[in-house]
Image (cartoon, rainbow, N blue to C red; front, top):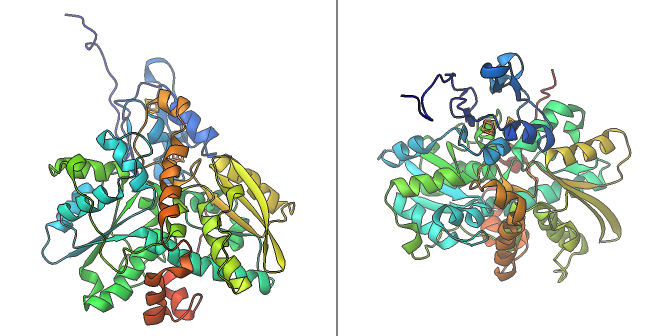
Length: 458
Ligand code: SF4
Ligand code: SF4
């Protein structure tokens, strides 16, 4: 009668209090990898093992729901869980319902890192670019328009670069810190709210993408934005939190309606019976499917910095510079520092990924010891290519394979092969400014493409 699977088991209520993560302690084997990751990688330590002996389980302090803690939504705990006790809160059903709704025009865009990770879910080696198959799969799923969030990454650079130049010439708050990574934003709001004035006010590429689709493109199509359903595919779980933030509804409706992680997209493709590996390469819809090399490198740590420098250096020098590869800010080093000549000024920069490294930079700025003008911070170590929504790798691979470099190399290879490699050379971005925003940093651009932050320190 007594076997390996008989005996008493504990039963716990799932913690599904957040919009991005579900904890099912019934599956947990108490390895504590999530606990260590939350403390040592994500720097917030909002989960621990509580109680003793047979009652031991993972929980937040005082058994509070995760939504009431300083959890930054990074999803790094999901990526290390060996048994699937942690998962993103799925929005696949919402997306399938929207696709089946004849009233809805359903628009999709994927972030740079998705094309560098999605193939792993279908048996391709780490570091395989599956962009073409991904586009074709999205088309077969029934999306009305398949665009690219890379387009909005280029747009972000125009806005962020203009903001940086404005701060440099008007004695604005420096260093300016990038605002693309919602886990990082939530961390700063909760731990270093005194640095909110340093944050760029630019929305992230995901939110700019949705905002442009529901304003500029809705007008172009003559469709009421209430009938447009925007889906973004992200390597990130914090994007599910970001889409619900206040001040992210430029058209009067949420900029983004649903966020699928890379893993969720793979599940949806499989559930629809699409044979991903046999697909031919698909083509994006235009104009919002157009992007430059600068837009695609956003997915790797240092990519936003490099993309911004490419544009800012051209604008300040008034020329089309040939030196566009900023090697010093590339790579998986935890903190990278450098200085570049921009016109006749020297701009000192710092790049950090992973929140324990972000803390070091934040403390320097807070204590007046930082002399940088521009800082890029990404929540996840190595940047979005290692986001909490990317395919889960076993512990051996995580420890012994340079999977982050392999995924990042996909993005740098795409960049090298792009005809245009600077965001201000994007004809799609140019059209959006000509037809809607007039110029970067305009009043209208601020209304649609910028946002505000809140102090979450209790
Ligand atoms: S999502 Fe990130 S911050 Fe939240 S519990 Fe997991 S590791 Fe910690
Ligand atoms: S990583 Fe997964 S199995 Fe390990 S303690 Fe956390 S929830 Fe449990």
